Image 1 (tube, one colour):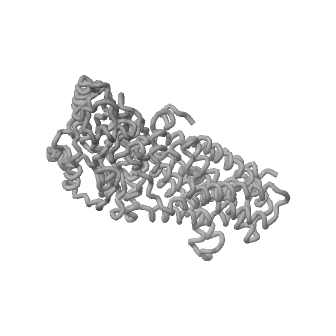
Image 2 (cartoon, chains in turn orange, cyan):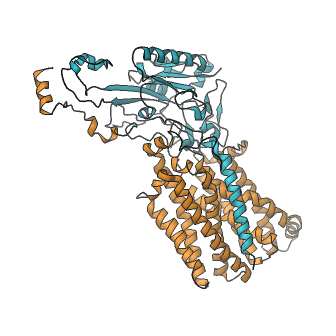
Image 3 (tube, rainbow over the protein chains, first blue to last red):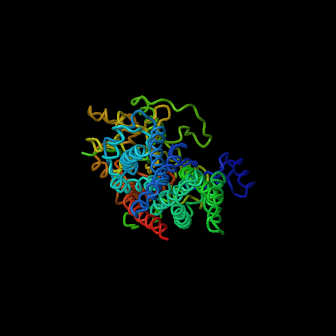
Length: 346
Length: 278
């Protein structure tokens, strides 16, 4: 050791002075590579959470109208609103999805194969099937409403389309569209999503159903149509689903554990806590459960639920991005028992 | 026959010839001149346009320097006690690791792909058919290693092809060909496994007891995806090289998720039906 080195060693109490200070370099404290994310986040832009939202509305609306039909409750106004709602959501959904593709002109390649283990593949197929059913049902509705004029086509549509059968056949595909979006995000390497694999699909379906019921109640109230019985049923169903949704979100947060932190981070908390929890669940629940049902309160709670549902989906997608970009989250998740194991059961 | 890579990080000198060879052979565009300020590595990570990436890992020893220092021993990273009871905190170890697509045996990206663009080719490598990929990007968050990435101005996803075109012509991949220290070896996966085990034994006999093979299902924690066709000889914990300890197959839980969703659908249907009862 040279004289100069010896001196500097003595001066610094035995510690060597170098230009590199490993112990003061915060990036070297964690075990990762300079904080560079070990996995890549999904590139999804706003189209995807919007699709999750309108897809859920379509699925829930069809569920309500089909259950009403099966129970022999024929409300023409409600049926009309739901048939056209499902049609519009099923036209918009593929548009948003194709818009988000890197090569939109090749969207049809989704149809060259069916992979049961790829939620993206099953989602595409179920959208096509449900969308076609929705188209047929809406065409019949249009013929019934006289939108197609009084001609041979209308009469043919009314005669050839078995309404009851088609709604029942479409129901499983519609519900699949509604809940599979949860599996779509949980079947990834992103800790916050993958951790919640068992509850993601139920949460999405519950939230979708609650937004759908709110949509129906909103339109029926605004147009002043719909039978009193329908409105009562909607009100009761809204109350029940909002409780189920709140329970599922709470259970999801417990399940997500420490990996759920991004939902409460600075950039997502306004959307999640303010949007999804307060305005999407707490406020409408207070309106629904308090006192007598009035038109104004119903309209307000419906609007809040719809906005909250959209905020919830944006919050989850944004939180997934933060989760994927955090090396610490991924490494702790993929280091043992926390990650999904083959032997795990629902 | 399944082909793959064995990347021996203990002999990597960080020359980045593999990165350059890969870029040249596969005609990949540059990623821009970026200065990270973290280390001499300025290409950061694998991406849709960087299919080989050499990580520069500065691995300081956290021991205090006392007594007389033998700088030669320090540089050689000797493991036996130093003369005069000296302890070190200086050079540490500077590890290099040439990262690449792991070509998982149960590949999450391939299972996620809804178009069937990602396949296993005749060499049992995970291969993206660029004429089919429609850029849905679902393979990107599925990959447990952050390898596969969508290229923004192209729209499609890209990653290492294990030089499919060269393999068809009986050539070894460009990176393995260019590697001057044989840190990157290409061959039959079964042969590579034997080579890797032999090399690790050799290292352990020399006193480097921390050396191990990463990428076989039995050891190295990649059992969740049945192991990788790209294996590595590592000298530190996987996280140091930005690799997860126990990567898992995300699609393992799709069936469970569908069952959970179906149960929820039944419950919600019943709730709506009950709401009609007066």
